[in-house]
Amino acid sequence: MADQSLLTSYELHSGGGFPNAPFYVSLIVLLLVVIGSAYLAAEWFYHKRHGFYILWSLGLLALSAFQLPFLLANAGTRFTVTTFNVFYA
Image 1 (tube, one colour):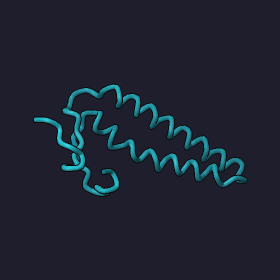
Image 2 (cartoon, one colour; image 1 turned 120 degrees about the vertical axis):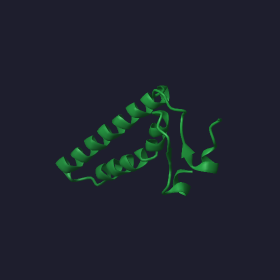
Image 3 (cartoon, helix red, strand yellow; image 1 turned 180 degrees about the horizontal axis):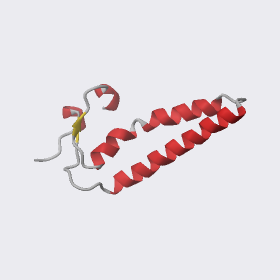
Image 4 (cartoon, one colour; image 1 turned 90 degrees about the vertical axis):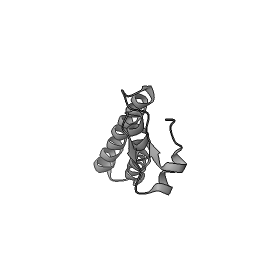
């Protein structure tokens, strides 16, 4: 059976099996985002002069939420997005 469109079923899947190359690339990017966010938060806690450090840290973490469905889909897991359907579609 062919993969269904995300807009029609809100279901992400890659057919099972082992994680593919986009999964590993996205995982590396997600780890870099978390490390960068932790660094910016540490800079803010150390200096506490510039508020943009903590804002950038929180913004990076918020943007990384968009990678989670992509990571899960490329890891071979099958799931249905039940909340925030319009948000992820």
